[in-house]
Image: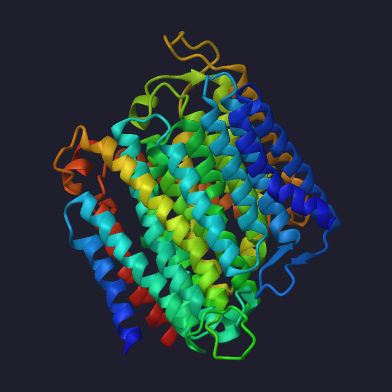
Length: 110
Length: 481
């Protein structure tokens, strides 16, 4: 059930990238997609249990720390790429205030 | 050797950031790093053993350096060195060199890592560094081209990430070896990410614009080494699991033909080179065991070609046919072109022979046709007019750096001949010459007289993303059959 929602998020993001006309919206759609991917990692981590993997004396069903640690890297990378793209969009918006991809593309392809 | 490997892989990042603090030394840092990589790559190639570095209790995070990766490392190092020497006198800022050295380091990392997570990080760093290099001129067009590249690569990597966690779920390890135990979806998603990033077949249609609109030295880096960073894991995965080889073989044929048929009718020299990269990537992928040698020769030749094409009086091949180019420049251009076309005495011949020898008969027959296509494409460069004393063109001066850089690359092509001397048999020499002859004949009889404008609709941004879903379906279909 949860898995279906996660995949729906990823697909919504993916189709958002294709269907949205505005460059800004495309970037946000990409963020939605990456949120879906991150959620999937968290979901995979919680297959074995939900508890925070910090040892506290008693043994409970811990969540797998590896996917969580790994996705942290991916979050940071995704965030920096997002920031980089937004800077690019800021620069582009000076000459293309509507930020419509088709317009930008028309002006900038030889 | 273990310590040296770790220092060698970490050094570029360290030097890259030091370049900001000591901007006067930045060029020396990159050149020094590239020379170090050449030494390291040669040492690994000569030693011909496999070096494995495994992080203890690390869920499969491993570095593996074998002779396959050593050839890729050599390609990366020589191209980077040539590009730095080329830009030595062009007044690039410390920012450019920092990105170049980080790109160099992360491409090296992609060539030695043997798990999906390290590869993900390496590929994303490559994407960011490549974007910053493409956008270096800060013009609207360069930013758009870079943004488009970053968008496509990041979306592809998101699919790849889903595949990576599926591999982890099946094996509790991110190691490449786990792919064969992983569910089919994992293979499909990881392949989608890597195929898109390396520009194979239709998912590589982002490549022509990106590689042709970037600045000359950046184009050389992108086409020479960056695409190979995602080819290498595909080759390694195919070597580990047998049944993936067939999928790659099909895609490599598609890529070889798509690229070559677009390139034959292209009139812009840089776009033609970029399109031929798509087709050459097909050749690299076709036989994973031979991919190192092919990638090395293609990287050197394509970097040299991009550097030369960027310095020709015009980008339009039709105009170039009217203006003779200087003789020494023409000789270098012809040598690099002949190498890609697989002419004997240059390393491209050995690589082509080795690749064709490793193929199944049906594959070889089809790829031979693509080889003829390559000969047609590069006939366009080879039959450009030249003169010993060209009238001085205003504004176009060739710097010393340019000559040294191109000479290194072309010299590398001659030297790399030694890697596979067994290629020189009467049989393979004849085959290569016949294929090139047919190619040139077709060029003179047909291609030169026709003007055909192929549609570029496939290169629109929305199509590039949309094609990923198509590839996904295609890959699933291939896995199911």
